Length: 316
Ligand code: SF4
Image 1 (cartoon, rainbow, N blue to C red):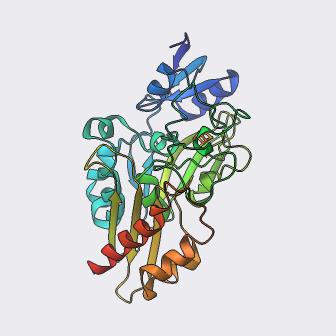
Image 2 (image 1 turned 180 degrees about the horizontal axis):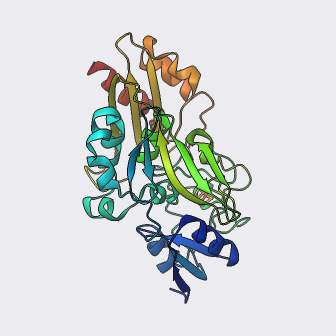
């Protein structure tokens, strides 16, 4: 690990200003991803800004019946909150499907959104990776590469990595909004649909955050009701990232919403696929995964996604 300087921020605005004042600064809260990346020298920040003292650890009700989740709310606390369990149960189900109990105790709402991909070549510094070293190439797309875990849609010739979060998939199906503050003190409200980027030619940029901009909260709109479920298919029963995950909200009349994890660089949802829910899983996936470009190793994800949704729909 390389040497770095460290400071504690006491407000989000001060943290954002400090980040803008140091080239190569990073915020740190739970550190469940960043510290691993620093040990491997994949991330080499020269300055760490500890945001644990910024007071953003509360869950509050909004005037329109929604919830405002502070950036520092730990995944365990969010999953267990009685209001979340009653009104937005798909979020609780997605959270408890993620990582391990110890990691969920430390991991924060903002950090979960900002975690980096688990592409094995991103973590192997002996391999070329455009996300880690722009312009280096993509080892995951070389002949014989191991791409079983990687993306099938929304990907590019530069990068086929997936976003690993379970929480973000539930937030996508709930139409959450990410709130931020910039170093200039301005605030932004970014729909989660627009928060994570597709790789295109610049896979090193995972989100639309600007330099120094800090997440302060995620807001959930008022509960939409319906039967809510999250189904995660993975290689191990726990402590594994999704091969495919499905977040589903289904209303009594058969309409609803669907988002997928494990298939794309961001939580994957399309309005035209939601509209096909009354017509069954095959009809939904024909729209949701239209244009998929899988590798030989991960083409199974198309069938797996359809069957995972069909299993949830069969539960009623
Ligand atoms: Fe890097 Fe993306 Fe290629 Fe993985 S898929 S090696 S993260 S560029």
